[in-house]
Length: 451
Image (cartoon, rainbow, N blue to C red; front, side, top):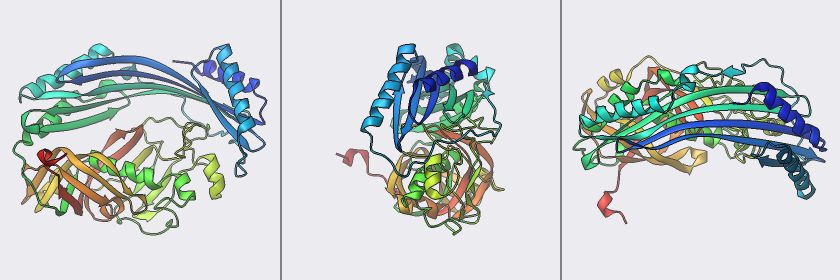
């Protein structure tokens, strides 16, 4: 992985070649070590490294972004030339003010874990073997992935900003399945791969699959549900996409627009963007070199804030919270390290306190229906169970939800004290389990009746 001196020397060289009014260079080095398995056999082992250099230049309120993976002398000259050429054909953006000045907030520069760095293909194979052995006892087969990522990120701009960070992380996901469409699923994230609890993932996924036999069909209706942390995280992620970013907020496309200070969820729901949480070991600055700040998003049900990069902070009359994405992205800023406040309950206690309800492991293909109403749709998957009189009674056929997320987070009966880190789409979420009332669920269409 590239060192701080190597990275910043390269970025300063790129900046020295530009003749733009302002320039910003960002270097990403990503190493992916991935083992995928299916039918309890490894079918893919990857160990690859990728280099991406972004050059953002500005002249006369015109802004261009050029990207290359070639960091040779000729590659640097080429990306600078392309950036300059694009400026000639780019329309001015009168709302553009400036790239960020240097941010002097001290941040960590290294969070490399030796436990992840040394978790080679042999250890990944041992983990797959363990999952296969546990599943085999129930005549089940395992599939999934062990994914290790190492990232170095360096940022420099012509105003004097200089940043560098390197870190790594690991995640293991497993689906265990068998005849009659039974399946169970589990996932775990840890910055230190040697601390992944492979036995727990294998046991959890297998037990869910075994318990999924002979599922009952339930009618459409509103149910009390107990969402395991992954299911809570999946709803939270879509909520973030729909409204916690400065771009949608400024453009009035966010459910948060015009709602700051107003009640939008239950008193017991609080979510904070907190890149400083030690369980994440996240990159402490954004792609503009600005330190990522802790931002309350919803506090005790009240809309509190959204996250910004420098451009949308300028449009919103505020300052950047350090949430810029890569320069060539079109999504604008959004949170990547959300923490939901825990409660005093546990999943076991929630089940005991449920007269009739449904336990949901996670959702499948959640998607937007109406962003302003935070409406989403998707199905339950890999472990859906009927609860009656305080105990799990039987498996349930997968059901489809058409649900407003904010309405769900306004009907929280109980929240677990324990929280886990759930990763999805490069976003980390520290989330509890929740017991929620009046949750919309409908019977899924039978497979044989589909086109």
